[in-house]
Amino acid sequence: MPSLPDIMTPDAEALAKAAGKGRRVRLEAGSPEHDLFTGLTRLGDNTLILGHRVSEWCGHAPVLEEDIALANIALDLIGQTQLWLGLAGEIEGHGRSADDLAFLRDAWHFHNVLLVERPNRDFGHTLMRQFLFDAWHQPMLKALEESADDRIADIARKAGKEVAYHLERSADLVIRLGDGTEESHARMQDALDRLWPYAGELFLADEVDVRLAHEGLMPDPASLRPAWDASVAEILAEATLTRPDGDFAHKGGKQGRHTEHLGHLLATMQWLQRAYPGADW
Amino acid sequence: MSSEWPLWEVFIRGQHGLNHRHVGSLHAPDAEMAMNNARDVYTRRNEGVSIWVVKSADITASSPSDKGPMFEPSNSKVYRHPTFYDIPDEVGHM
Image (cartoon, rainbow over all chains, first blue to last red; front, side):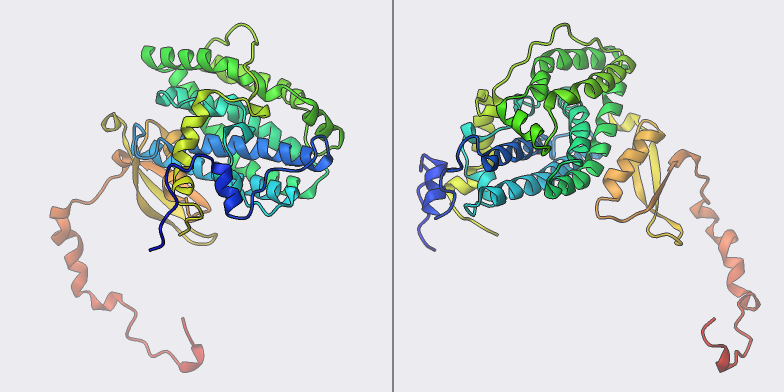
């Protein structure tokens, strides 16, 4: 057996370089390719990180049926990640695959919103995070179906069918648990209060979003807010939960500034490729 | 927890034109969640185009101890099988 690289190799990107691909992104900031690459990694990193988080429930969910349902959703999200990051690598043009982007970038090159890296905590918390995300994800994909880039529209159509079910399920469970027992209600309200400040980032635009929207490639994030507000208000009302006051939003994830939770998540998710670069099976 | 949820029997139609077939059972608090759970547990590999869920408690089953009186009498009724006809070759498969 060939000797394996040292597990202490500190830098995932150095591994990528050693593998002869994954040279640092040299797309010029502000160029159309860089904008599109960034927009696609935002989509793909959201689904990747949330998919990984949801997969952490595998074997631990409260009942068998929920365990399988959560694993299905995680797999849907990882599948969507392959499409988004695959296209991102294609746009970048340096030969990086979806796997390279998933396993050989460090935290500051991830562009997911902070919401999806929040820890699972309890089952209710996981479902509330899923619901807040799904209620954005569905209208986002609907809008992406109208993208000027057919490749984006195709992925959005495929993912949209899966996400319609994710939303139906997470909304249903938020209602059941919110309007359930005293304890389940308290836990769902607590989850909502904790996660609320992380929802607003979904609708904040930076200059990349503005240019992508101008080109008709992706929607203006703010344009999705009314639909999200309406569906969230409807479900929370039915769930007898109170929408928190204020719209303060933690931000920075889309630009690569993350909470400490992402580093821990990546340490688990990327461990194998860091310890055994290029391992395949 | 799951023991408090009733048991549901799941039937799936694999293709248009075929019958629903019993594929297994699961626990769920009500029909809507039983349907969602059935979708997640039993159609992950594109097995179906239609799902039925029925509360197990609503199914009336024959008792195993009645097997003799229920089924054995038909064993000796060979005349109920249409095997006494000669079918001309031209008819082909019936």
